[in-house]
Image (cartoon, rainbow, N blue to C red; front, side, top):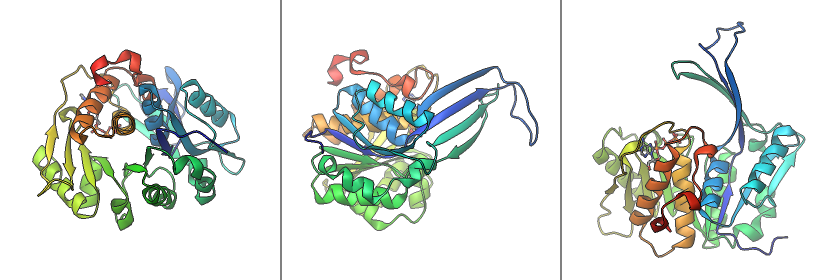
Length: 314
Ligand code: ATP
């Protein structure tokens, strides 16, 4: 049993991305030749954990992979990034989560995701991880594992006064009200905010309105990320809860895949290391970290480490 207290514990998903690039997407029953293939590490939970670890947070991942090649490979990836794998379970009952992705020359894609072992992460795994979960500074979870597991993790953390970040992605309508009540920071993108609140989010003002609705449902604070426009931040502590727009610096964008996860991983690092910093300042810095990730191809491959970032972010 662990004696360590972690800065950030992530309860979430691991996915292996199998990416083929081809001139066009194949039709049903057709076999075509592609020109490039690569394997990437993905899954929202793992992405967020890896970004927090690269910033310098002491991290642990609570997840489930298969007893297969991809599972072994993923465990090694966590170790290579300094993430504790004490709570990474392996199962023979399902394969490691995988996303088979085909990208055509126009940049369009067709994707099949098989969540596999991720869906077997459950209450027993959380109980095993309780010593780490109950003493963490920050717990982060999403919706790529069973929503019941994420909700249990949120409730457990909340009961133990561990700060929580909940990322409702991929969004599901009719979220259990406890998801809101157990979230210290409820962090989502525009389309998730729209699906959850019914407020069409096209502008910064719209995002503010959607954020107000999320606050009304019981979150302590809300961040809605807005791609190149940065994010809006709202807090229930402020009288009348105004929304604050936190802009980003313009950058040359190459690939935005996984930018949202980079933002959340960085946010978790700041919440753990600078607990008295204002949420707006944390969001401003997380914008900068995610802004670095969009300037390089890949998901985790594009996430910066502390040494790659300006010292004034620390
Ligand atoms: P993804 O699904 O691609 O991971 P997302 O939709 O969850 O992303 P976004 O709102 O697109 O999340 O982006 C998250 C954060 O990444 C933004 O708040 C911003 O800080 C940064 N970001 C994203 N796109 C850009 C961009 N083009 N230029 C600068 N920063 C960006």
